[in-house]
Length: 420
Image (cartoon, rainbow, N blue to C red; front, side, top):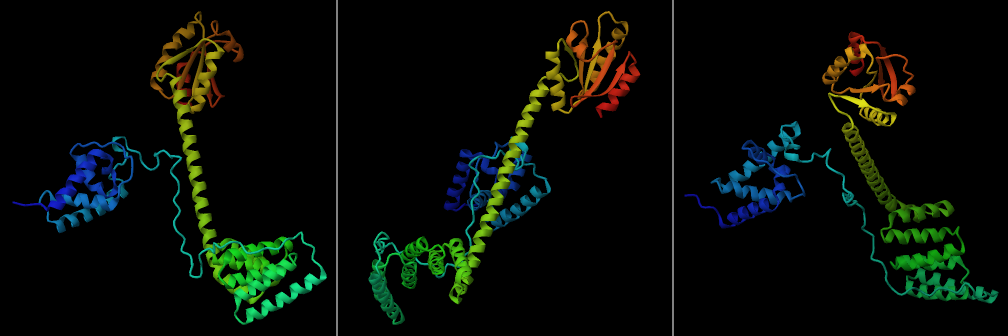
């Protein structure tokens, strides 16, 4: 006698419990073949409600087959073939996903929380560093009066800083430049130079603070844009980095800017293309949602309009107030309306009346309206009725034809002509 592995028994029980708790998992595409088999036995399923992990169901379904005596390898192969077969049947339309009240993709309501999940972008982040979360560096007081003596002293400190940079003593260079900034806080070049040293020290946030200060003093500081662009590149802020570096190159291009742009531009382009792609998808989703809502509204209006019309019957009109909703309903449903004016004292009207009733029973998609001119005088006046019977053919709110007199052959010919 076949004995099933204990772990497989547990998985099978779990599968059964899952089916009981959420029967809609049978709608998972990987189980399409199994679902079709159950449907052939007369099984019916509830609408799909949520997604289920594909791999998890494959494992459980394989266990299910093992419970019937299939060897695990055979069961796995059968499931694989069933997946292929089920996908093929679904693609060709052999599996009707609208059975048992299910939603197809085209009819599924678009929920507000159906957010588009953006994929990751494949960026070159090899030189990106962690932010330098150190206390902010000293900044000069722009309100301080800068004398000629202070300017000279600041220039001396800058020269010492440049010497320190050439010797690779970057921290010493920062100290000299900070002293220079304290002496002359109105110099954009001093802030930009110190920012450049912070870039060399891989302290991008400090560099950005100095670059911002330089650009606040001189909005056309090429070095300010260059330093900020390089610092932003170190933080992986590729789009902002590209903007700053392009601005710097327009003001005063150098080879270092071009070298950094070769790294920055490909990443910035990828991000831009990514944003455009998902912006397009969001717009498409919004348009699809708006179209879905428009269709729902139109369907609701059509249902409301149809409820006002009686297929196969002649609708009596007793006033203009009753007529307008009927003609509007006919227009909304793109149906032909025939307005029959009659009178109780009219012999030809009595003769043609049964014919009009029989036409209503025959042409179900045509709206047949009857007006007694003595009862609904306002309607008769509006349509300038001078003799009865008179038949007006109306489509989309406009008169398209007319029959005067009790000519049943002419009447039916016109009905047939305009109802098509």
